[in-house]
Amino acid sequence: MRSEPPSHIELLRGTLDLLILRTLLTGPTHGHAIAKHIQRTSEDLLQVETGSLYPALHRLEARGWIAAFWELSMKGKRARVYRLTRQGRKQLAAEQSKWETFSRAMRLIVNPAGQEGQ
Image 1 (cartoon, rainbow, N blue to C red):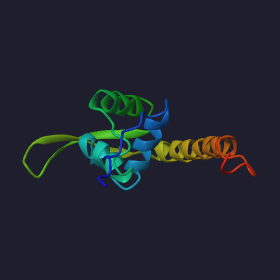
Image 2 (cartoon, rainbow, N blue to C red; image 1 turned 90 degrees about the horizontal axis):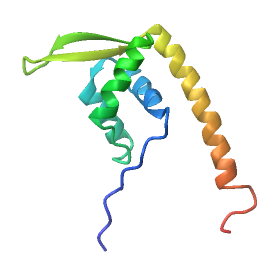
Image 3 (cartoon, helix red, strand yellow; image 1 turned 120 degrees about the horizontal axis):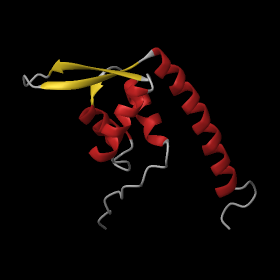
Image 4 (spheres, rainbow, N blue to C red; image 1 turned 90 degrees about the vertical axis):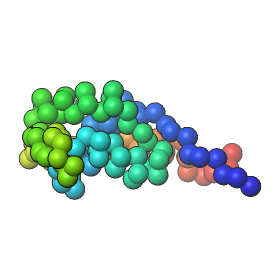
């Protein structure tokens, strides 16, 4: 039996910021690597399109949650690299807390106690 490739799911409004901030917690990186990390870490279920990623990066930079700088890649090309700021770390903690509350509420509604299998 051949297994179907995982289908991509759409990001919920507001989750891209959390995903970017969480990705940058491990260290500075460029945009393409951020998108690839999200895709790989989500087992290919989430795919961030360029048209969504770069506006989000600019928005986070404008809010002071990330900072950007130019760096030469190993191939000798200039790449814009993003890093998490102190303010971004605080925002990440707030976003993670909101997400945990939201996902708990969804679990309670989708899988109510005592109603498994109905």
